[in-house]
Length: 124
Image (cartoon, rainbow, N blue to C red; front, side, top):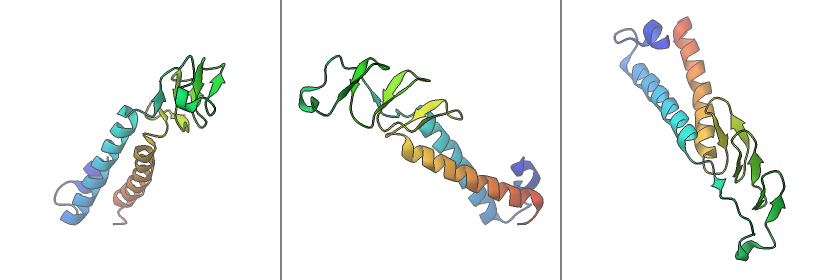
């Protein structure tokens, strides 16, 4: 809608169009990286790894040994390192390995939303 109303070629300066396209494509890439990247899923262990015997603990809920900081995500039924939450927008767990992509996605959503509001209302 922002493109049709405010960004179509010839309606705004070229630099503004380039910034809008860069932010929008960055948002799409960040969403794809968040949704498709491994969040830090740990394999199930019937016994703690020998080098981590004292630091790993048994979890009845997940039926596996897991390190401190790893949590069982009931929505995806996996144990995730540094689990934060299950994101309904990406449909995946947010953990150690996809946290940076998720934070980038959230920041770009905010920036794109503000920019689109300014463009649609004619403030820019």
